[in-house]
Length: 504
Image 1 (cartoon, rainbow, N blue to C red):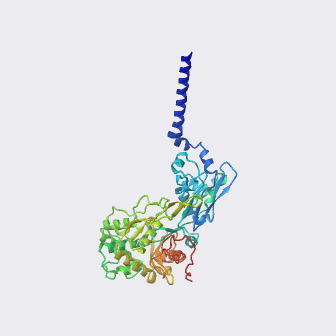
Image 2: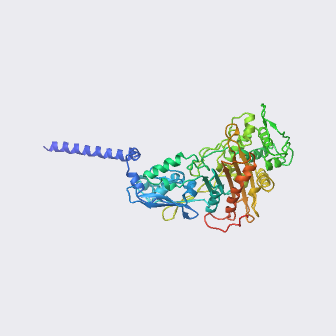
Image 3: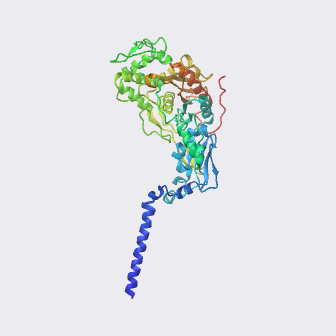
């Protein structure tokens, strides 16, 4: 009898071991499979069972939470939702999350091990902590100036602090209210369908996810390549450029919308945007040097994040000479995001240093203790300091004497470049109006803000004046809002400062 009891006990012990082993297999090895199963609502119930952490602008939350009393208890709310939608994105109980709500989700949802007193234990147990906070670099006055300047038009604005890469404004219009998608009911489903089917694409973040032909705004890059390579030694010397310019090995001629471009100096060609001069310069500089300069500015850089992913701006590295000529004036298949073109203006303002753009200054736990901080860093040096000084001089000339006069700010030093990008089959589409610029107040030792503006539906005369007439005033309003908030202070845009008076 004793032998049978021992066998029974051993068998029970074996079964217990197998049960424990299976439980361990389910908990450790197969946990992700069960977690990701759509039928498993436990994570969603836990996730929405507590308030989500907030996203802050200038020390104030632009998000909140609403207690619904339902099984998925808390829904996301937004303050000035359309204004900050290109920054926050949405957090929906049905449709997931985008932009900062997605890239900083673990901090906001309280699942990040950084929020746990014992990070390793917290990562293993996946216990929820109170949601953390995400503090952005956005300056509210600049954000609102960009939003109101664009009005109801399709377009985007990106503004940077040249010395650090902080993103000071990020606007895309038309916009939408992210709160329309927060819940899980029939109304949210209707809103989702309506927003996705809208011809104006309000949920598209045009500032970082849409690329456009940059048109003549790209001539800053071409000028940098010509100066840095030594093709141009004197910005006031004639360039031996015909008008019209026949594209190499073709019968196609390229003309200008302004007079005086034949044999024009680089200074004149830049001020009045002579296509023929820059197309010829691009060919003379050569594909290798043109592509290298564009890539040092950030073109063809894959995987850029701010921390949301940014679409790749393109400069083709395998072109023939006619295509290179067109690419050198921002046409053919050269494309850029507004953020990329703000980086171009910022590089000129910062002496050739291309800073990595970033949108999150720091993250904190629910009590405000910092758990993460973004440190400014350099991506590349786009060109040498002499070239930087000459480019600043040329850009100031555009605003003081040329096509960018509408960006001038009394008492401030402003540099800019207009651009009109043709698009559509046979250039039949309305041109995109561009303006890129930087500004420096009298009390500052360096430029404080760099801006890129694109307006899609620029129904204007098809020349660079449309960039100066439509996009430049928007850039001026954004720069005016930013001047006086000195970059020498710790944390640009984190506290209110007295701004300079706006131009009448």
